[in-house]
Length: 463
View 1 (tube, rainbow, N blue to C red):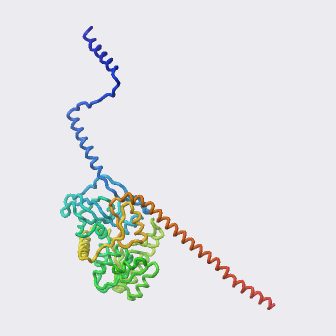
View 2 (view 1 turned 90 degrees about the vertical axis):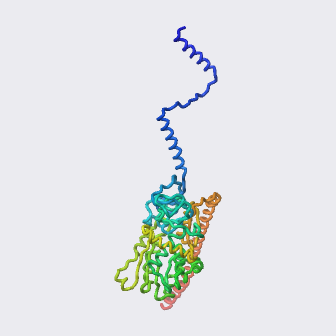
View 3 (view 1 turned 135 degrees about the vertical axis):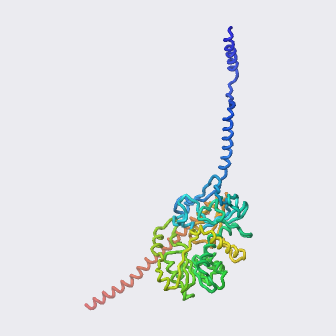
């Protein structure tokens, strides 16, 4: 046997032994890689470890997905930490404020909100979680309230530090979220534009709303101010206790007539969030040296979706005046929009500092109407849009308990059933009224027939 055949025979013997053993799955071991490849593999492994860590950071956000009804604002989950620029801080949001501008934004009627998809929200309160470069006056753990053009209806936000204010001791996150938009708006209108002084009179529309409540409280900080406030009858007791001198039910009475009965000469200040024909009325209610301050166009909002008829009507009745008329009338007209003052940091800070001083003195305190979970944003918006709130409507980022989630559909069905039953009752009443009219018509016709018969008999006798 040659030396060349020996390895072949040995290999055959090994093959026979392997065939006789039970079959096993092959086990593969990684081959040792060259030094360069090993370093690259280690770097790749490190990267894959870091990516899941970043992706693991998630937070919930309310997103306006398109213009329309309440269902256009959806709760979504975002991945990754917001990137911090120089001068910015990261805030873990606790409570968000709901404003009338958010309702208008949902319908595409608010030009300070970028096009969808976008997160609404102009105010919130929370805790600082991270601080960016060049930030020296905020630190991790600070409790802050935030004011911004949009984007605050989220669990985590990155905002410029200069747009935040330290929450004073004793103030809750709910109060802090209710303060910025409403109180800065009311303060600047009353004192910067209005120059409110003792013994003056003022008309506050929607006196039970967020701005209305803030304006009423601020009026009380000035001696002997007479406040006329419009609200539905069911809210009169509350707004009277808040400081409204003369509550007016705008649904059943003409507020112009009611004001004239008590103050024939007119008013010193009119705050107008309505627009359209109400702006004309407000201007005509001013006494000499009076001031009309327009800060909204709520009359454009009619129903869940944009109502083109309401928008057109508002524009048709838009208030215009010649400067000569202003001169001769000794009146002034002002316009206020907090969304366009986002660059005036110093001006806003001065107003907020004054408001916080008044809060510490116990002279102002936000009135909270209700707090809703992010999952209930549709219900929160509906409550505000249907004018059912007294004070501020808030959203909490605290997750909604599972029990409440189960109960909510049942409650919604119950509410829908109530509305349906009410519609049926109203229809029955209308049908009943129609039937009564039909019954009355024959009774009215009977005397007419008798009169006609008598006339015919007279004619026959004459013949």
